[in-house]
Structures are given as structure tokens and as C-alpha cells.
Amino acid sequence: MPGITTRIFRNGNSQAVRIPADLKLDADTVQIFRNADGDLVIRPVRPARGRALVDALQGFDDDFIAALEAARDDPLPVQEREAL
Image (cartoon, rainbow, N blue to C red; front, side, top):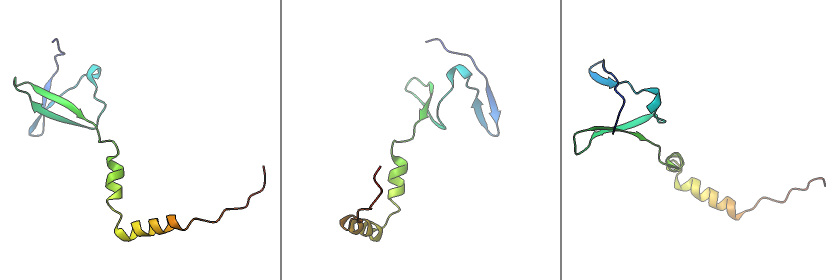
């Protein structure tokens, strides 16, 4: 499998790899590991779909949920509006 030759450089105490524009990753974070052949593999980490929603829902306590359920059982009155 042909590849692109690029540079490795120092970034503090770590090594960094310049990723050419042709191989741009559309991600904020990556996972890096060695495969069974010893090759380094860089894989984009995509956020789990709906993770932000699940995290936000974890912040609601039982009292809040009970209030939502009570409000659902007590519907709002129908609003009177002018005819179009």
C-alpha cells in the first residue's frame, strides 16, 4: 500500500507527525495504537451520537422528572386566536 512520506518532529517531550492536507482528518481527537504488525494506526474518534443528550439528561433528578410527568397530565388550556 503506497503512502505519503512526511516528517516527525519534537513537540515538547513527545514526537509529532505532520499530517499532509491530502490526509486531513475531520475530527478533534484521534486514537493511536500499534496493530499486530507493529504499524502505528491513527483513527479519528467520532463523538457518540446522542452522547451530549444522554449526559444532559443525567443532570435531572427525580423531583424534576415528577414535575414533568405532572405537567403532562395537566394540559394547558386551548388558546383563542383570530381567524386567518
